[in-house]
Image (cartoon, rainbow, N blue to C red; front, top):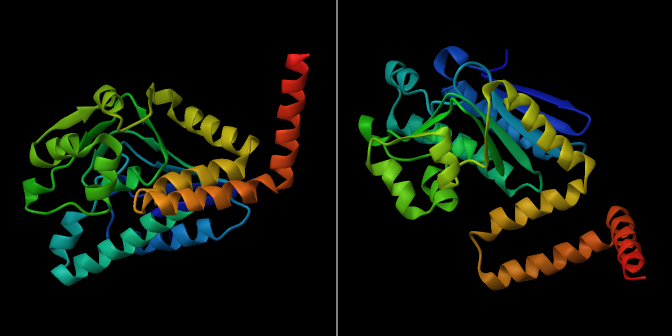
Length: 258
């Protein structure tokens, strides 16, 4: 029983896969709890150096499973508790020094936007479509959308998606900065694997700390960010990997000057 999310950890790579394709990978109550559990498991595993977030079926994620909520007799308090569980998972991933790449296809709707933007780098299939539609059913943004969406594309464009029945195709999403790349549907999995392997084959810890500094820095003062940068680069400089890479860079620079 997966409760809608599969997890595979192998050779430093964690693959988190939404697995409710019949419901467009919309999050119901068990899936929300599973998301939080997976986030804590992945970020506490010291063998993990990179994360892939992807989904089974024709859609990446249609947000929260409103149908399940409406037919289960749930209250507003139940919905709040579910959102808080998902938020805990999002925050856990975002705050961790682990680079994450998302592979998105088909529909990315509502809270699916926030789940997608949990990733530091997003690759979209050419058939991907992005839409809010919270207000269409009388609901308000959740799953980090009110913060992560304007951080990605700016406040004005975020409001265009939230206040109009606007749908972006993959090319528009790339132009807006919502996704980093658009690839052919058949190339999505291989491209995302390539990106994750680049991180794992390189200075993995440095990539992870870069994502953490950028993400966490958005909610702190400039002085706090500068202090964190100074401590982080000093700690990195003392690692064996950095010492080897810095020495190789210095040797190559000296050779180039001679």
